[in-house]
Length: 420
Image 1 (cartoon, helix red, strand yellow):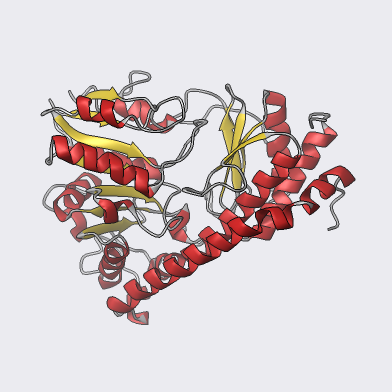
Image 2 (spheres, rainbow, N blue to C red):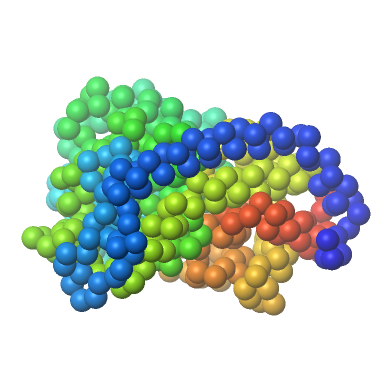
């Protein structure tokens, strides 16, 4: 390649092909399965060019939008889905589910440790944000993960009570140094909860996890899931949006929070982007495979360079996130500046730590993306706090991830921050 990369870094990269070949082959097999799954959902709903047209105003009678909802419902093996460009983020999709299905006096029980940063103010754990769940009289408790990063099933069973309306499961690691939860583990949690109280809603924050495994949480008993379209299921081309899927009543309650009671899922103009949302979903299994293959390379490269990574290059993948523990703020900054140089957009921009809405710590972010904030394309970010780790996500092509990872390593080398 034309970039000037240190010979030692290139030598480390050169050692990886055989080391990661088994992990790459497994990703190919899962991707092939999910390609068929997505294709069959399209075919079952008889998707046609007619569905790519858009609506304005209220969006009443938008057959393309409604068909996309049904395609998502089939993909998730769920009763109903809500797919809207008006959902601005994964956090927004999660908020719709929680505000739509919790009432004053109810309890929300988190069973996968501390929630993702942007949910802290939503729940009422940080700050005095008006309208938080706590302000509305909704209680919150949390069961931490054990020392190995796994859910404590016995403590979860003991914690579920009659007021526990929703059990929240965060599938991805977020900004925590822990393993993501695989579908088998999520199924175990749901089984334990339902044995104690069958009426408790099992909700899964599905961000970064879609199409990484063969099954989705709704296929193993989850009542409700939510996520963002500028992550996995947008295929790198959805310009905005989010989704909710699950039991029809629960999804419609979320829709009532997005619009208004009595209007619910019947509205939401598609504004001409239906084709992008359909096409993004169709491309998503391939994009997820490419992103994961790139993450495997990045994990192997930084293992060779002496850094702790999670997951390891030979570990099973359960979400799109690759965490790399760098050990200092300076190293985080150098890493993100290097990766930014491999971006197609704003490659000249120099990332700096700064405050962001919803986060309690300063955050450093690299992400020169065609769609603002699209972690499906390729980005790396992290809060400036212990253990000073960056979290890589996405990658439209494994080669672009490879370039970004090499430039990040080169930036660390230039700053004198590579380990011996």
